[in-house]
Length: 340
Image 1 (tube, one colour):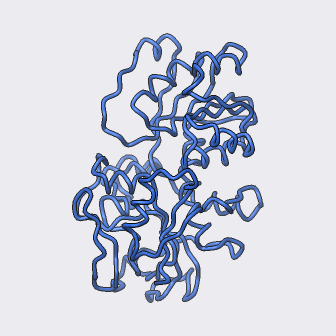
Image 2: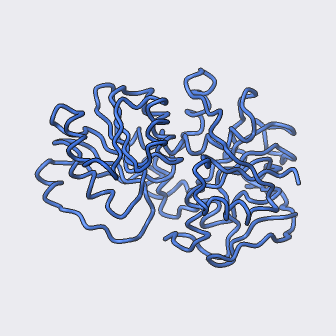
C-alpha cells in the first residue's frame, strides 16, 4: 500500500509499505478515505516542528471506513465510517491518572511520534475510533479533529457567557476556535492581518475585528471591552510576538491560552502576568473531545460544511504541500483523498 513519508525536512516521498495486520491491541483495520493537512504537518515538512521524529508517515486528521475487526471488538463492524483519535497515552502516569492523557508522560501522537494516517490502511484500537454521523461527508468529517482542538482550548480557558474573548489569528485554528466559542459567549473579538479573513470572521460570529497591520491591538481591544481588556485571550496565530501581545491586551484576572508548539524563544514582560494576576495556560491537542464534537454536530450546533477548499489524491501530496506553501488566498482546508 502507498503512504506519504517525510524522510527529512523538505524530503517528501510516496512510499510502498506493507498493509498492517491486526493484533490484540490494534484490533480495528481502517481503510482511509480522507485525511486533512494541518498546519503542524507543514511544520514537519519544513523542519520547524519541535517534537517530530524522522522519518515519519504524517497525518493526524484521519477519516476512514472499518475494513476488518478483531475477535475482541464489540462496538464496530465492517463498513462503519470512523474518525481516529490521534492521541496515544499510557493510562498509568500522573497526567493520565488525573484525566489528562493528552499530556501523558509517554505521549505518542499519530503522525508525529508514531506513524499517522497518510496511508491507505491503519490499524488502531477500537477505543480510538469514533463513528461518524451519516450527515457528514468524509472530507467535512476531517474538520472534527480541529474542532476538538478548539473545544479543548475553550474548556481549558473556562470560557463562560460573560467573557470578553480575543482570538488572535484567523486561519484554520482561529476559525475553529470561533466556531466553538460562539456557542459559549457572544462578546468575541477576532484579530488578524487580512481584511478578507476578518470579514469572514464577522460573518461567522465575531462581534468586533481588528486588523493588526493597520490598528493597535491593545488599544482596540480596550476600546471594544470598555477599557478593561479581554477576559480570555487565545493565541491561534503562533507568531513570535503573539504571547507578548496577548499579555498586554488581556485585562486584570484574565486567562491567556497558548496553543502553539514552536520552540522559538519569546520575549515577554513577566510583570504583566504578576501585576494583572493573569493565568497563562498551555493547551495541547485534545482530551477525549471527539464525542463532544460529534454530539454538537448531531444536535445541529456545529456545522463543519464548507471548510474544505481543496482536495488532492494521496499520490499528489507534494503538489498539495506546494500549493499550501503558495499561500493562495482561496485556501481554507486542504484534504488528501484515497480515490487514486
